Length: 112
Length: 116
Image 1 (cartoon, rainbow over the protein chains, first blue to last red):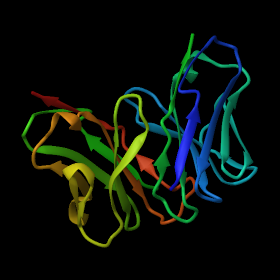
Image 2 (tube, chains in turn cyan, red):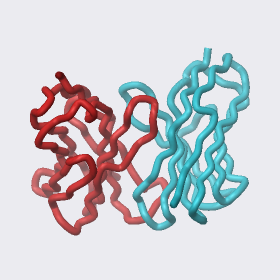
Image 3 (spheres, rainbow over the protein chains, first blue to last red):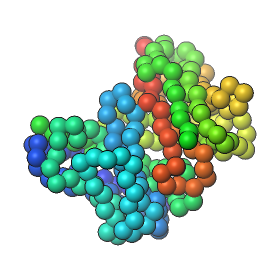
Image 4 (cartoon, chains in turn cyan, orange):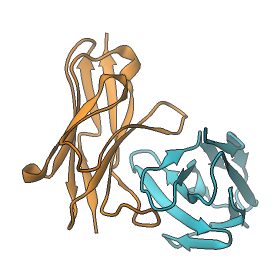
């Protein structure tokens, strides 16, 4: 069966510090991968998606970037965090060609 | 482009009462529709999905939803609420069968509160 992992589960970082959040999927090959940010009362905002290694599409301009160095690994990064980067970050995957998405447990990021 | 509107950011019902969470969508083509549930500090879990096979869709935990094209709605219901149903519920729509940026558009969510 397929599983999706995210780490760390929680993170507290100072403004201006770098960020690296990791997401890995097991039990499937060539998945579509997604990064979402969830802020209170605002639902889920799609940040990035990837349909293959090295292929990243950004949905909104922001202080963040994403990379996919391996087929089942998706990384969310920032060089300098802003207060507004605080939130709950969710990684998701879908089978290529299908739109049902499966979510990871999330990372709670607090920028102070 | 597609969009989702969830009416009511908070819904409160008594334990044992009917649960009704409203979702209206906008899509230029026949949509695929989903309901997800999120428990505190967890990821989203798929409750059910509509993919044009049947208008009444049954999901996990006793939930079901009915697709009504004339009303562009996909409301989520459960006959009898349980304390464990307290969570955030998200409706999502897709106009395409494939993934990518057009995969899913989410509503802002409805927080379901169960009163003992």
